[in-house]
Length: 104
Image (cartoon, helix red, strand yellow):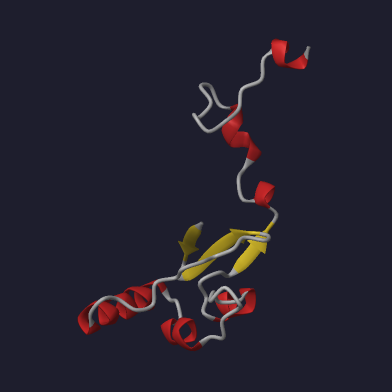
């Protein structure tokens, strides 16, 4: 999730989320420069992604993701979505609708 207000950007991940295969190098030098510029526009510290130590799977560790500003906060997954969203009529397609038959 990415949201910003007044220049402050928040990138939230559910607690325990694994972020894998972060692209840091493209097929060409020009592509890699575009990728670095893209991260820069988002406020992500590209060089931290490049230089950060990797775990045994080759992925950046949790604290490196924070240091790079790719993730700014973790929360329990149920705190990432407002429960009110599924109380609307009609409920969005991703909401589970219970009927009285479900309770029997």
